[in-house]
Amino acid sequence: MDGPSPGRREVARPAACVVGVGSALPERVLTNLQLMEMVDTSDDWIVSRTGIRERRIAAEGEFTSHLAERAARQALDNAGLTPADIDLIVLATATPDNTFPSTAVAVQERLGMKTGAAFDVAAVCSGFVYALTTANALIATGTARRALVIGAETFSRILDWSDRTTCVLFGDGAGAVVLEANGATNGSASGTPRGIIASSLRSDGAHRDKLFVDGGPSSTRSVGHLRMRGQEVFRFAIGATVDVVEDVMAKAGITAQDIDWFVPHQANKRIIDASARKLGIDEKKVVLTVERHGNTSAASIPLALSQASADGRIKKGDLVLLEAMGGGFTWGAVLVRW
Ligand code: UT7
Image (cartoon, rainbow, N blue to C red; front, side):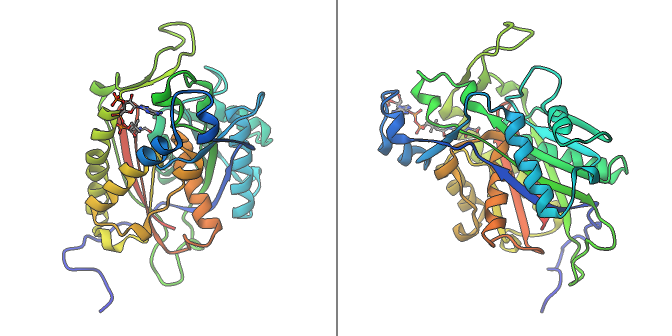
């Protein structure tokens, strides 16, 4: 019999719904074989330890804001909207064009938006789930009606290209969604409300020296390079994932079997596989892009969403679970009825 499982909690009607999605990748592909000419590594090591085969690298003069703008325009097209329909941009990045102003205002200006508000969110690889939760909350309080939520990065600019333990892992890219206040039109015909159902955000600054950039305007007056104690991050990631995913599932009164698509942050295939196994999510329901994109930090989830929605896997009404963990440490999950 259809209907809620015993013990399920009634969840309030979602405040906001995803109505468009888009993405952008730089043209240049950097393969593992090309990396072998730069540092002492092998295709076999990278593939077996991470699942990554290639990543994209931004061209000279191609900034985070350029990738963000392209992803935003595609998301707007996908939603059948124009920049004039948007009154909020929340952009997650750890690689902004400048220390200030925010990359979000650069995107706002290029889109020709004269109204609304735009700001950046800094939560590194968890940035997109933080940004989505923030935009959803601003819509829920009536502060905004339609938001562009963007994850955009050019990590190639902060990598130490002589450090094989980090430079093989990351890539550049951007993804975006349009989030709209739920009106009469956004509830699905079947009566199941569409939109953001539950979020869970966490951080613990005690781990901030395990994945960080060794520079900054206030400390060194420089940009710095990414540094990571990979094994310690790896060990933390799986437990953190389970922690926030169980929290959103409890808030929504669902189980892992109810999830149609699991779209995790794409850092490492081994972390994703182990997390899915631990959560009891079928591997056929996991969206994977790490092989072609590498780790694009805040961009990885919206890039994966864009791919899986463009190829027809994620469809209206599907229950989609987003999850990420990264520098800070920060971690979080969002459950969306697509
Ligand atoms: O997005 C934010 C979250 N970030 C992550 O989730 C990343 C989490 N960490 C990881 O994904 C993994 O720890 C890595 C992929 C970074 C590393 O994998 P690992 O299995 O933990 O390897 P390891 O660090 O224990 O290194 C094993 C060996 C070492 O050699 P020795 O000491 O055993 O001789 C490394 O020096 O692999 C060596 N190594 C490499 N060899 C070839 C490290 N990097 C490379 C490389 N190519 N690129």
